[in-house]
Length: 450
Image 1 (cartoon, rainbow, N blue to C red):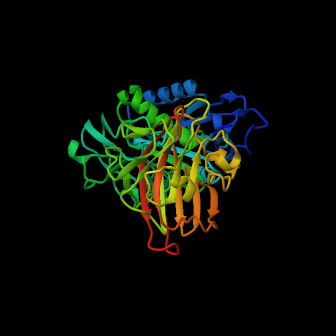
Image 2 (tube, rainbow, N blue to C red):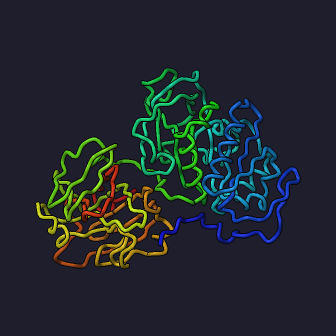
Image 3 (cartoon, rainbow, N blue to C red):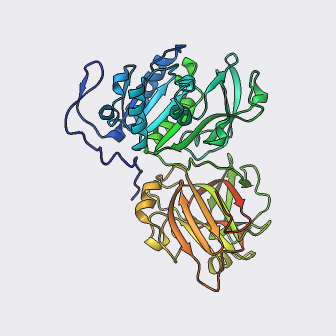
């Protein structure tokens, strides 16, 4: 059974006991918070002509994907009771100082209780004197050149806001320069290639979309959305939908700050990798997909240990979720895939199997925390991210940023302290895909850090 996690507090506020009145006197029946989003578009500075198109786009996305959308510019919506109705608040090209101090404090409490924030374009040109908001949005607007085409380099192709995109995304918009680089505090999803347009001022490192967990809540920001055409563009609408789904908790992703990793598979080449046993992997659109088996694609160029973090993105194809694969660690070099089975450890991918052989398990040795796993797991067809963190003989498994297993090896015939890494192609009927395999090594287990 697949369970899309919701924000931690939405269960507690599942159904309000009385009919609520929105600003302007509109009365609506109570509804579960995770099914409702508020679009806030008040401006105290420049006003974008695209705001009506943005509101209409979010409402249409809600109709198509099962959430209700309210829209307002009335700050009376920013009270504890009214904000509690919403899984996320979309700041749609807001500008200037739009919330008085008591409304700000209510919004801070909303985020602290697990609320979601989605900032679109000029949301970064808002509330310069409110430090909490500056941290939430991630970076403030500095300037912009004229509207023009540019290439966006997608850095995270597992997050629901960017998983549908190719590695390079060509589009036209008004490209903001920011006062600071958000990479120091947030997980960057996509960045502008400043060589493809004129007017970029961020010295070649120019994030344009990012996410972070912030003071109890979730925050997503995209710099796109200046033009009316943006909200008619299917790729941008899916980008915005993915940000909303993640902010509300309807989809999961690893939005922790990520630094110091190097690619073992970057989407272009399997150099350094070898296929052991039958079957293979196809390579298309930066994605490795299993074919046949039972075999293993293993990184033969070198071993890893005693302390490292391996991250990789994966997706199962079948609608029933009954696809089988796994990630192997700590095995000696061999052209026989069974060497990894008998001398290493497999972190399983197959949510339909028995507890000690299900997604997140150390196969045959230790089941995951299934409640935590179910809360963190995206369903078949959507991408997930594993972090497999080895510190000596200790292995911790994180799924979409959440720890679901903590295992310590005590088998003298096996060791996690040194060995190779591999991904499994399990069988003829199994289709599991992988992207962005990367590793970060630490000097010692004692000094390891994220």
